[in-house]
Length: 183
Image (cartoon, rainbow, N blue to C red; front, side, top):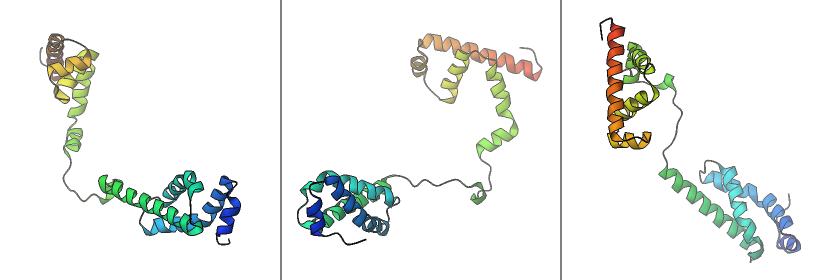
């Protein structure tokens, strides 16, 4: 590929799409290399962003090829700075690989699942009505107040108290029946 010249730019001024294509073909590898050297995670995407930002300003470039390169690389520099600032503000996300986990203590969730308590509780909750189950989950698991639960369920706090009382009574009765005692 031949080098971009002032004559090529001047010749293509009548057709901005032609100039843009020519500039992209000649300078995108350099911009990509610059972004790779600056440590940008996705240099291809940022290269495209640079040229998208260049397109509306292409007709206003002065100084020939030198002015054009200055503009392109100032946009590329700004994009790489933006990239690093954003990366510094967001946590690094990595994939969890269990085989690399060196912890030897089981988690509380593993313990609860291994004891089988969850299946009994879920089975008991399964015998409740939808509203009773929802009240218990919101009040006990989510630790919400009566007012918050009432707002979520579109009921009065008094109705929530009544649903909770009935749900706990039904759970008590179901647990007594499951264990073999009388309710």
